[in-house]
Length: 604
Image 1 (spheres, one colour):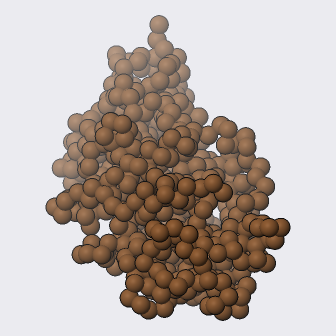
Image 2 (cartoon, rainbow, N blue to C red):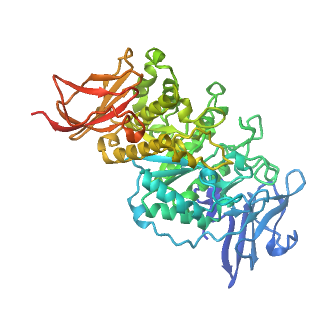
Image 3 (cartoon, rainbow, N blue to C red):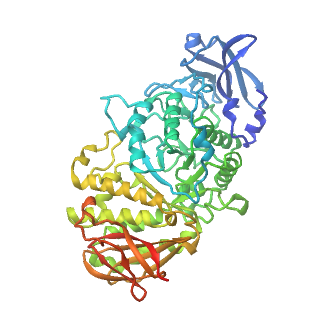
């Protein structure tokens, strides 16, 4: 293939999968599979599988490089055949291990890698790929989902990628989302882990089908104009003895010191090792090259920046260098793909370019905004005046990074309650404040992300073993929240002021920022001739005539009100155009209401 595997060993490669793993080739006119493995501490290496009746003597691998690269050609090997590597490790023990670069694998609890010809899928998304970019000045509304529990309608078995597509694509398109984000779809042994403790970083999760079936899902999404973001966890991996753990007896992938075990009980990748860096960078690139991913969300970045995610334990310089190298390489070769950090730290420059000593991500989840916002909405309105800054603080630091605003899966599990359950009040008040919250998320600068179930106000915490409670939508209160999300998605996408140059401070201005007595907030967002005003009432008080100071005098129209009955409200909205009067827009402000106004005509 002309591949220089020394580049892999130096930690610079993002396509090591083109050399390592199992590849269908023709040698001397004979079809078969060439297997290549990097295992520097291994000896007496064989590939065993269905093609040789698991005979350890049939296909001994040749050491083709002193650094520990092994290779063998197996004539007649075909698609879907199970296999492993059999060798003597550094402790002198014979072990059977998976192929770290396998493109497919068996369904757990079975543990073998499987051959798969990854090369010949017929794509139909050229138009979409040609038009995609990193969306800095475009609307991004992400539907985060777990494939296995989104919709279970096939009894005990999981829906396939194609079956999921049949139901998912009309839903996403109808709701107005721009992207989906799938929780890790790489192979993992324990379904309840959600995929973050992986064993196969190049292998699509076989529970839902083979690589071609996942490609089909992506292809169909793209044909409908919907992008896909893939979660990826380069911090840690599963400890199963048949997988990557102590692979060749020489701690090939993990640390060999006190940092070996992660806070999750898994093993941590030694990101100071160049072979590990190329392994993981290649895995990210593989999902972009072969599965046409439009974005990669890197999980637990704070645990990459700091040892154990704790600033007091010091910086992990090897991991920081890995992140910079990963983002730099991806932007060099795929400048239209988003790199996204799930980061809870206050580390500076997460979305600053690597040339400027930043980490090089395009976006960072604003977990501070999420935590402050949810704490505020959980408060009794009587006490909100004492925590007023929880809703104003985000804009004090917003321009330091390119932020996404997430209400993710982490917020609806482990006893935390769903978004609806987090709201203060009785049944009706919870729904009213949830409508307010969602409007605030869409109004606030920053890209949007919501976990599945948020958009019909699920009362049930997410359970990876159960389908979403879609039956909730039979009740008007829940179905009205679904309508709210849909309309906000459409408003968001239709109004340039809500997304264009959102990280330019000239596009945002507080109109009411310090009224902690009434707990009313208002701000404006502007671009070109478009002027929008957003107003939020954070208490149960109702105002028949509340004055909002404006920058631009003229006639405004209300384009959204969370208190309309179609969203489950009491219909306390503003009908017809409203003229400003002496620099104020005087409006009807519903109890717990949120509304959006658009300048219709400037005063001459």
